[in-house]
Amino acid sequence: MPLNFTSKEVSILLKLIKGIEVYSPKYLGIKDVLIVGDKIGKIDDEVDILGVEVEIIDGKGKRLLPGFIDSHVHITGGGGEGGFKTRTPEIVLSDVIKGGITTIVGTLGTDGITRSLENLYAKAKSLEEEGITTFIYTGSYRVPPVTFTGSIMKDLILIDKVVGVGEIALSDHRSSQPTIEEIKRLVADARVSGILSGKAGVVNIHMGDGEEGLDMLMEIVDTTEIPITQFYPTHVNRNPYLFRQGIEFAKMGGFIDFTTSSDPVFYEEGEVKASKALKKCIEDDLEDNVTLTSDGQGSLPKFNEKRELVGLQVGRVTTLFKEVRDAVFDGVPLEKAIKAITVNPAKILKLSSKGYIKEGYDADMVLIDEEYNIDTVIAKGRIMMKDKKILTYGTFE
Ligand code: ZN
Image (tube, rainbow, N blue to C red; front, side, top):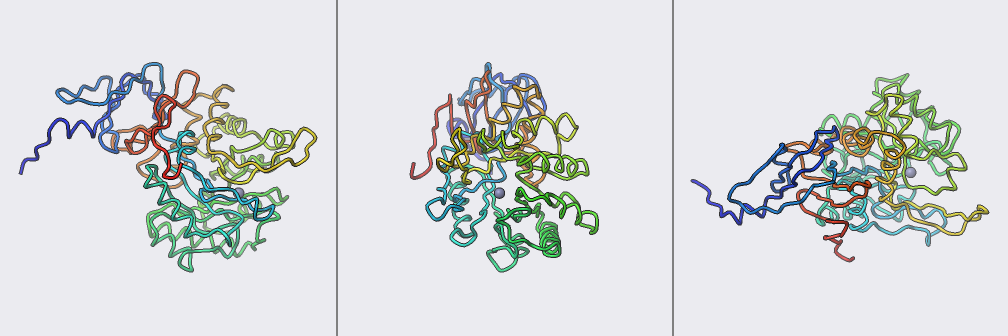
């Protein structure tokens, strides 16, 4: 039976970005990009939709990037290390959109008691209903981890939103001080569940300031068959020693993640600014092994010039692209820098339709202006922000 659509019915499915510099992340030149529903339909020198009215987005003077993936965000809030009143609030949609983020991975954190996986799941579902793509990690800092079903294997295999385990804390005074045998078993279980479910099954590891750094992970890689890519350590730019060890880990084929939420005081204490860490990795030919995440909604102590604690701030997802931008201003080519928040996390987390401006992929995109400011954000074909103005707010904003 032939399907008859009126041109008006077709036109609501279509959006056409005209004459924009496309970074897929690879630079493709100036192109037209047609969005069909929630997918990228066509990328060509010129795309014309004859006889159908279509919403045109003028790309002149702008650059088109894949929507950003932030794979470590405390979407239900985090913190609480200074007592109940320091529990940070939930994220709201407009913050995510302002940051150009179209895919987010939610994680619990230090507190797996007053914060639950069920709540994390519900928040992820609500952000998805509001228009972006979401996933979650099962577990919290602690080993044995909190789970939905009593087993991380069942969680990974049976719950669609769960793509890995984390953040499991190591080398930190707040970690549960797990033994190497416990971590081996945990990572092995995550790996097998990933194989069985076609998911990543990575273990996102919160790295603290402890002297042992990545030693335990290195030992597991040396003494078992578990591939190094099963680990996804984060906060690796926390101090110079951990950063150097992280570079070695990446040279062995591992993935490392740098945190973008910070305070300038921390840089004086040795934290490596994420943009500098990214630059160093790209100079060392490790551009495929590195990601940036914001640690958004995590708690961030705020100090004055005398280094007195004057309050707590909340980590912001908007720092994610800010650090990429700083790296670009520091001489890193844009097409290399954006890999850390697009194709690399998509690969590590096995998100098959994310991370690229490519025909058939999800229409998740960010348009930036000449000064590298986020101008327009499109999530699954829907325009969430245009000309720097938020069009879609969260339900209670
Ligand atoms: Zn952490």
